[in-house]
Amino acid sequence: MARSSLLAALMAVTLGVLSAQASEPTGSRPNIVFVLADDVAFTDIEPYGSEIRTPTLSALAGEGARFLNYHTAANCAPSRAMLMTGVNNHLAGVPNIPEMLSPRQRQAENYQGVLSKRVVTLASLLEDAGYHTYLAGKWHLGSAPDQLPSARGFERTFALMDSGADNWEQRPYLPIYDDANWFGDGKRVSLPEDFYSSEFLIDKTMEFIEADREDGRPFFAYVPFQAVHMPVQAPREFTERYRGVYDGGWDALRELRRARAAELGVIPPGVPMVRMQSTADWEALDGERRRFEAKRMAVYAGMLEAMDFHLGRLVAYLKEKGLYENTIIVFTSDNGPEVRGAENPQSFLATRVAKSLGYEQSYERLGERGSFNSISPSFASAAASPFAYYKFHVGEGGMRVPLIIANVPGQGKGQMLGAFSWATDLAPTLLAAAGVSPPKGRFAGRPVLPMTGKNLLPLLRGEASQVYDPSETIGYELTGHGVLFQGDYKALRHAPPVGDGSWALYNLVSDPGETEDLSAQEPERLARMVAAYEAFAESHGVQPLPSGYSQRGQLISNFLASRVKEPFLVILLSMLVLLAAAGWVRRGASS
Image (cartoon, rainbow, N blue to C red; front, side, top):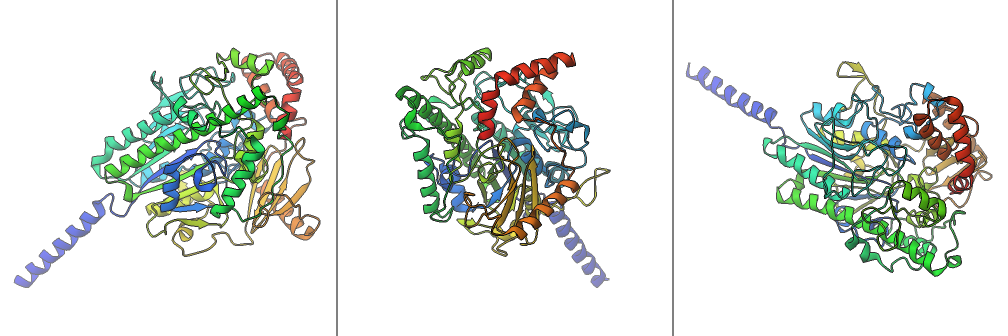
């Protein structure tokens, strides 16, 4: 009798311990902070070779890992779709931003420009596993009620639906939007009077975390900043720190960043680079224009430093509350630098457009409240040093961006990882770190596509030097531009008018600047890679472009179609606007 009582007592204690362990919501499950910058280029931040002060990101890089060969889509919504789902953007329903899709392409199910119901988000999977899920920042993956982030796995949200917006107040930055569409927890909301985007988004993130901090459950906080998407705007005190820094012009900056990146070991020494045709002659500009261009770039630098400063506030909060050590922090960018601003914002047309939106562009107030700013294609080329091209293009400048991951249990400090990685890899990596399984065919009672990205934890923990086998391929397409990655090589096709539609081949390890086309030296390799790309395009439902398609032209046409209901008038107005803007479109295409 005594023995049976003892066994019963031991069993009760054992079951109690097991029950306590099962109900312990945190334990080894880490918190996750996923920070996504907007249009930040490869050498735009200090740990990758920039002159811009980003001490928070430098500290995170020192404590974690810098990825040197990480790639993403060449524009924003497709990147965000892959980051949130681990599924290629064409299958996820976002082959391009919706503002640039043609009506003919929209006839295909996967060409709606909003996140498909066939994919499940990282937030949904983590929420289902017991995580709190928060979003403060840009969404741009759909604005219908069932497409809002609050309907796609995020418990608390304060989200911008559009491609961008003013950073100082609630106003659109382009005439394609009637308003800046912000939603909080699924409902339209207004911004406060003292709004500045980077500060406000961090305030919201800390507010969300603090509200649930005492319940012991882990959290996933997604912080997609507006910085440094146009309009490029920054508080004066941040801009002033860069007064005079860019007086030497864009060519000097491109060279300085290449040298600094090589010194840090981010790129190999002696990497060659091309000079983009869209880069203007700095010396040919008069003194007043050079002064204005340098100020445009100073505001850009100030906006980046302000973003880093406010991210530092979040890191300090996590440390103060004892959360930092158990919080994985990811920082990356959605694509390379933006080049859609006017080449000369002081030109008659650019000034008229700015005034029509209620903006002014004086030198003294550039980047401040009420002022519209962007950087030119020339400084964008410097931002992407030593790479070719930028956002909306498939050169390395548009697709290779910084990626920092810190605080993963078991990872080393100050890692420099040269293995190829892709945007779809982050969702499965974070799920693995959280101990959550990816979806296996179904989720929430519906069929979903499997994640195709790779788990990067073996790289971070020093258990592997690569996660992609040299025979594996990754395909990508944007508005007729095509890419296939395989091992050390990249095949790419620039569609007209940027290129002639023919394929080129580059070794990204020895020539990340894409200066030497190897297609004549290795025709068999190129042929195999082109065949693999064609297979990718077919299996992923890549749609052909309508004749005469241009990114800007389609943007204008879609805007007019949304405002004018008579098809004949839409066609007529589109032709007039395109003819008037022909030079602007050609400059953007050649960039």
